[in-house]
Length: 370
Image 1 (cartoon, helix red, strand yellow):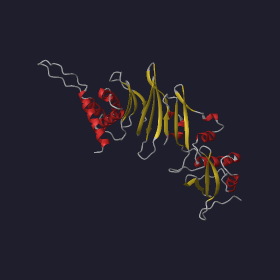
Image 2: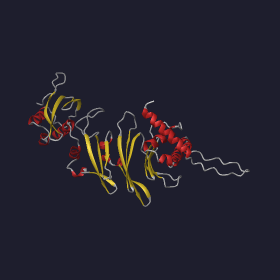
Image 3: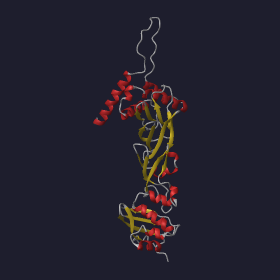
Image 4: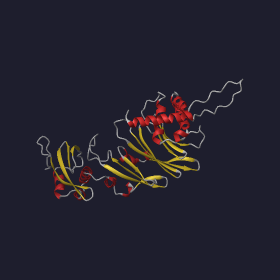
């Protein structure tokens, strides 16, 4: 057995023994001879297994949440590392034999609080372990299907929860974030990234970084459907966008905001991570808006703009697809022909188009405009 699996198995075995030792069953008490001994309550693990076997979906959810809270309160589980607690809760849940999804349980403790992603896509919840054992936790979100990662940045009366979901095994993970805050009436969700339209620009396949003081979120990922200049089919190049979300009270806003730019395309260009493809998209978009001066700023030679005009790249109805791409060269085409652009890096990561010409193929020429 690999050492990693051996250590995990031993950790779970030790935890299971500890949980059995600290069962919820009351300490033995003398029983009058004429009275039968009472049956002790079932162990927390058994309660959770039975909860997953409840048929009615609403009753099942409530039973699972209560049983999970009961198990979370066990001293042996609270004293374990989050990874061990997560593995144990996952194993107990799946041992019910009723789970059809592969989502694991993910547990993040902090003092008397715990954020838990419950298996079977039942959601993410905040438990206050000082509350009565039968009290339901605070629902943070029910949209946790396909969860693969959970992390919490804890603060005084606040928690920033970052998580990733991938509903299908072969699909890119999507980044999410929610801010939970504590008020006079308890904990509540103050901000959820899923409700912010521009979040989705870089969320699918994106990477999220959260500042320790929860003042800033940095999300970087490939944008989908951000240009009319190219067909961006599955597997085709896309522009990466780096978005900064600054905290304002108990919400987050993109900084700088899109409305501070003269157009959305200008904002997208400001947020685009420098790359040859990002430069090519912006060049063609400017050219097709008849902004030849703006397009010239993305070329290292005026001849590039002349070639774009000559080969009809400036026609707004043309829409291309990338057929080849390397570190400094992109080949793209439409029904009128195939073009090849070469790039050079200037400054700190900026890319300019060095040349634009027809692909040298008699089968697929790019024909100059008359």
